Image (tube, rainbow, N blue to C red):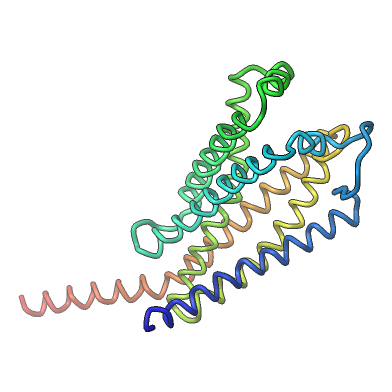
Length: 260
């Protein structure tokens, strides 16, 4: 019973974070539906958006398999952010933008590779052959995956740094769960707007590369802004601890000198 009581608060905050994300996601879907970015009705064969064509392939058991693949990729991404925050909370690493980005990049790369591995088992040999004939060479594909992982790495790196900022501020005062909930709400709304815009520029019958590129640049800029803003919160929260540590060292040095 004692363990159950200790679990109530952290699990309560976990469920709160999930519900906040669900609500923000629902708002994003509402915006996408109202603006025509998403189509919920039957789509005719002509004039179909690119992503709708891809999704139409996933029917029946293939759709269920894709849900597993997508779930694994999302779980890996989330776990990477949580692991970075846990390592910082435990004192094993320092929350730096470069390491947060590299961790996010590596996590995104592994998530994409796992998604590709499973996708190759979901699609039929005919579908894979048809797609392969229209895709660029393998070196170009590998380079594209690495670059796209770096793009996602800015988002995951920002998320990891935000978690560290919440941990650092909670050490000084307040509830970690409350700070995470606030951060998820603020950052989630920003990411939701950018996601809807990027998806809208991508899910068209003919992609406008300048428009799509503008959205990608906006995504990266905002991700980096969140990353370095969170880093500022970490530094500010760590200052009192560093000052106390310096004072303790100075006191020990004075004591040693006095004894000598």
